[in-house]
Image (cartoon, rainbow, N blue to C red):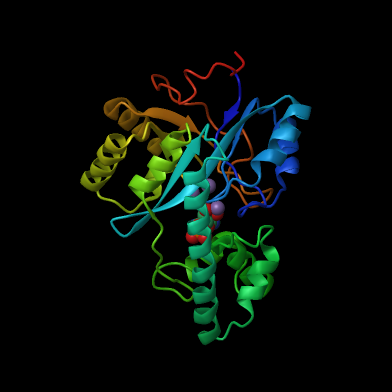
Length: 281
Ligand code: AMP
Ligand code: MN
Ligand code: MN
Ligand code: MN
C-alpha cells in the first residue's frame, strides 16, 4: 500500500523545513505521495515539485486555508489546486494581509503584558515575511523563556482569554471552497475533531460544507485520537465525504506524527485519492 500524506507545512508557512528539505525528509520516511499544504500560501509548491521529481515522490499541490465559520476558525485543505489560479492567489493574498495586521495586534497585546519586541521576534522565525502566524510568536515566546515548548505556549498565550489573543476574521467558508474548486482542486475539512462544536453544529457544518462543494474530511490527522479517527470514518461514510490522511507535520521535534508515520485509514473509508490516476499501487 502506498504511503500517502496529504497535510504538512514548510517554511513558507509555519513549518521548520524548507520545501526541498521537507520533500527529502518525506522520501527518507518512505512517503510515496505528499501534499504540501502551507497555511494561506502556495509559494512553496514550485520548489517542492523540483525536489519531488529528484526523489521520485508524487507531489500534490495543496494549501490549508484559514476560514471563519460562525465565529470559529476552521481550516480547509485544498488538494490538487492550480497554484496560478487568479481567484485563489488573490484570495490567499488578502488572508495574508489580514495576518500581518493581526500580528501587529498580537504584539501590541504582548507589549501591554510586558513582553516586548515580539513582532520582530516572531518575524525572525518566519521564513516568509508575508505569512506570520501564531506558531512564529510561540517560537519567540519559547526562546524568551515564557514557556517550555510551542505546545505549552498555546496553553498560556495566544488563545482566547490569554495574553496575545486577537480575534480575527478569516475568509468565509464559501469563498475558500469556491477558490479551491475554481482552481480544479478538492476541498477537505481539516482536523474536524479540533473545533469546539456540538454534535448538531458539527453535522450542520459538514452538511453546509458538502452543499458548497466540499468533498472530504480528514480522518487520520495528528489532532485525532484513535477513537476520533473511527468516529470521523463513520461521519465520512454517513455524509458521503471522502476520507483523507495527513500528518500535519510542522518539523522535527514539534509534531506528533512524523511525515507518513501515522495509521492507515480505517476500513470502509473511500480515500480522497481513490480516483487519482498517478498514485502508485
Ligand atoms: P494561526 O493560523 O496563525 O492562527 O496559527 C495556527 C497554528 O498554530 C496551527 O496551524 C498550529 O501550527 C499552531 N497551533 C495551534 N494550536 C496549537 C497547539 N495547541 N499546539 C501546538 N501548535 C498549535
Ligand atoms: Mn500550523
Ligand atoms: Mn490546521
Ligand atoms: Mn496544518
